[in-house]
Length: 128
Image (cartoon, rainbow, N blue to C red; front, side):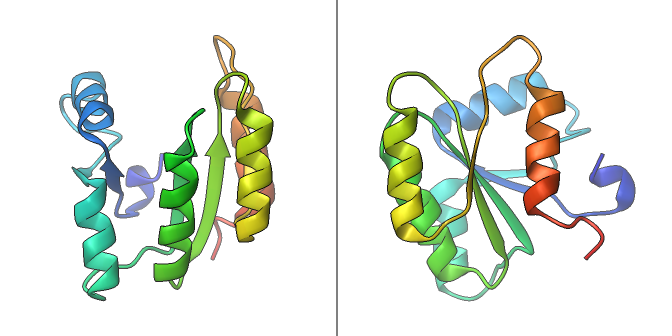
């Protein structure tokens, strides 16, 4: 959807996340540029890259919270953490609250898109 509106999409992810995205979208119809998350963070730190909006996917482990806090410190744009997963979700939401990073919870289901899209739209104005 964003690429149809000529929005440049850059995805930073771990090796496993990048592999899943590359398999899921072989022709890069939806994903655009896929890079190592540390390379994206380094480019932000060097001021050679910034993003208007960064969505940080946070699973059960605390590493996603650290990535969200780091990106929030480096970018001039909006950062929203999307928390998903099982038992540690409340802990991740509380950690993000402490960092001041807006966070939304994505309920796991077979089709999380409608409620997740609504939550993201509540936090981000796409008309900007």
